[in-house]
Image (cartoon, rainbow, N blue to C red; front, top):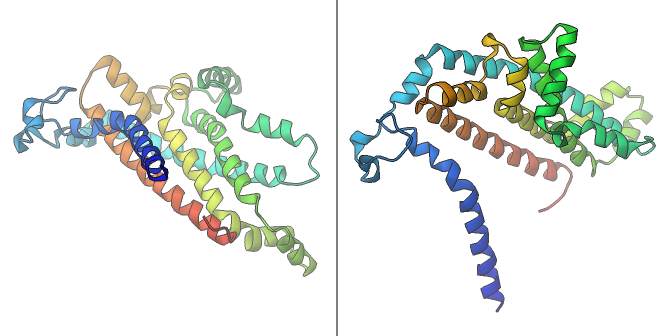
Length: 273
């Protein structure tokens, strides 16, 4: 009976995984379709080499709009990640203080961008940033993406600090180390995996965000998700599938990096899985 239950649970887990993954993976072979269709041709089903091509990837690299979108996404995501990582780490360090008043209220407020629908946040940011004169430019989008990415950094760094041994910082202080020196020499090396994991999540959030850029972005602020959205509405082309495949590969690489950071964090804290 135990073996039946064991294999039943494992089999159900595999089915759930396939249910979640297959709709995404179907995009990958379609991006190599030699024909400008969003469906499998008879040649592809028969694995005919002539039915596969890299033409859509070449178009992706040659189209000025797509090149601009990749450039904007990289710049915006990098800057937003730096801001979100800095703010999220500082917030997590403050939230982990035992004597902090209204800790639950502060935590709920800081992670609210994850809960509030993005379209509501985007509309609010549009009016707020427009009043400040930074709407319809890169700065507004960077700040908006930083707001959306900060909660991920707060959660990952807070989780890393749960098992943090505060006697290490007290020992450093007793030996005359300043707060800044203690942070960079004692605290930071231990929580670094959590910080980097949060930064990766913030970067993925920025790369995938399409709603906010619709409100805050102008013609020169096209990002990859916005270009994909415009392509689906104006000119349907398998180039979108090629871009989606690259985003999938990038997301997988980032998730692998996050898992490596998680395992490293557990090892540094002496926790065995």
